[in-house]
Length: 623
Image (cartoon, rainbow, N blue to C red; front, side, top):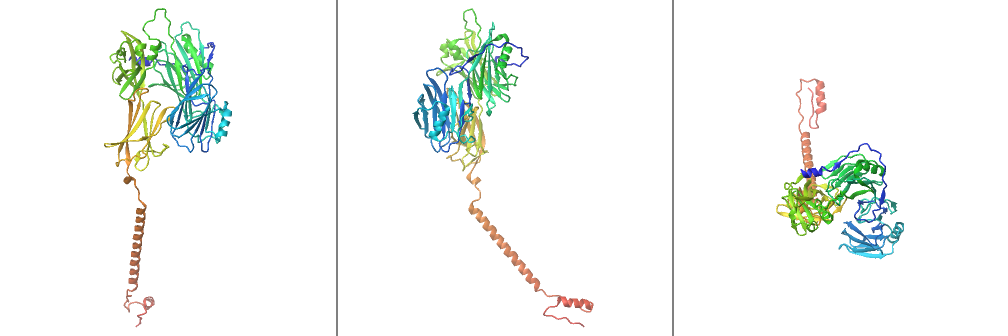
């Protein structure tokens, strides 16, 4: 019950009448390259464009940093699984000195030409494919850089100017619907090609309440035209010093038609302009005003005298927002007790990892929690049932239970339990651990574009299997086709990524399918973050394998034989009918003509008979 009580602390407030309150003075905080502040994942560029090259693809990233740091670090993850006539070109340029970049990802093209400016230092490249790295003095402005790229490579496939990115996902693909030439546009939306993770500028007003107990946060997401295809905005809430005695309040505002999915491990108050999903729960949309001042006024009115501060952040075209929030800790004059761990201990306890499948729930902590929290034994850490204690496994403290033991609660597809830390008879840490069991979808297709679904494996053609899984990068999928005691492992291609999941593709090319009519397709999805990949979920389908003998149609020889046989039978039948016809007609003409007896008929009758039935070999006489 305590688990459910903790979950019910998620507040779903409804708007009442707004009481006018004076606005506080808002101070702007430029996110810069601050890693600890709010972050957003989106596809919006400062400037950008797409074009249609004839043969060689050219991708240009012009990255601008506004921070004053002596060095800057950025991650670039590159994906592609297509084959090009010529090696693609990737141009990296920056306006800041001391930019260090790591390049990772899955690229099947060999080689890739990487052109970098003198201020870009590449500290890591993938093992495959071959990378040809060159350096040059590139123009700083996007307009000049675009013209330079066109002058050297005739056309540009994709161009993006980015501000303060921390991580960039780039898919080397052509835009089949774009213009013939790349012409820069402000606030260009690079859907399906680019995703960027970067800091968000925030504005904060600090209030002068005498006894504040919580903070409020406003996330305002608006979308440029044309609007993106995604209609769900994901918000990951991280509480640095939780659990909070008084939960912070979060306001989520976007245009009509956008919903929210919130991931949080502690109790918070949420008010959202669209439907809001929080673990196994969903709350209906509520009214929120449209402007910054009105949103801040709403937060102040609802918070009344309880608020210490209101933070406002405006994000364009965000797919995912990472929102760090803090609790307001009550200041006490008495010496610190052991009721709540502080500092590094609190940080270690707050970074627990929850893993689960259809059978079990596991909570994993770093082994350093023993030292940082001054614990004498891992048995001081337990589930909601204090009898279910932790053990040390390699470098981690691990708690594991089935979904029916240790006070575990299952709600739909979510497994819930408490994480407790004891010091003597006192509980010094407690929070709700919620883990959503990963769900996977398996589909069969006849073509590599995955547009023609099927329910059979064709023995003479390549069959394709798509497996959609949650967006967990430390994961793996394998698919087997089982027939009796024989099992075939399907070939795999690189997974494709979108904002909601990973899409894995398998195929049967160069596999010899068994001679059978029925089989079972089994796919296994395993994940583990930085741990061993032993948390697996499964999906199986009963399928049909079509053998060559079963699906083979009539060959050319069979068609010719049937045609010739039909022609011969028709000719013989025609001859037989003609023979019967001619024989019957000859027999009819040779029959004798009967004569009628005379004397009883009138002369007119006899005359008629004589004139109509006489033959060359007979004559008629009258008496």
